[in-house]
Image (cartoon, rainbow over all chains, first blue to last red; front, top):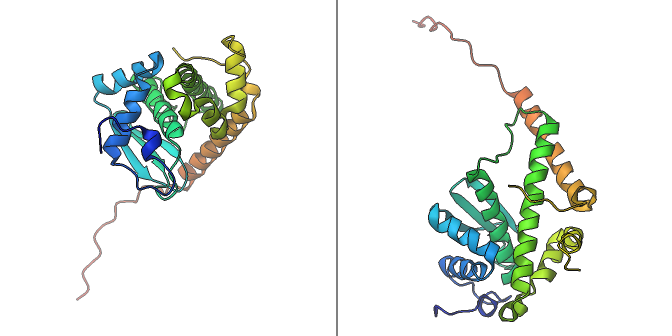
Length: 170
Length: 49
């Protein structure tokens, strides 16, 4: 697999997936092209975060440990490169929250505390991937990834509209 | 440190996340209620001869 492989060329339906290490390296390289994505790539390097890909029925990000993140998707029906990159960004942001001491409450904590903390963490994660998607969307080199469309397909359409309004981009 | 999106709490996505949190929380409560009490230390049974 050539080092310069574009994820759009290799993550196509019906094509064999590239090695996990290639997908992860390329996704981190693309993230690094955005200022906020660069922060995440630096975080991975500085904190020795291990990134793994798992086969799961539905696309999912999973953080079993503060230094280990999983991006899961159905290997027989691969997700788009843009979605893979945004999912990786989201779970890395969650790892960054944990590293900063912003953790989910204890299982026995009151429901209101769970709602307050977990919702704030989720909102922050969505803000982050909206920001990265916009920063990459603004670069012609990544227009094929259709990052804003991917965000909407991932169920973040309303959040994206609010974000664009808030940031004066709509 | 956490970033906000103004109005996010009114989105369908926020309601879905809230429902998931409620489900997780009630599941965890159920699990903790169903946890068996620690086993009582028992004297070894008398050997059957």
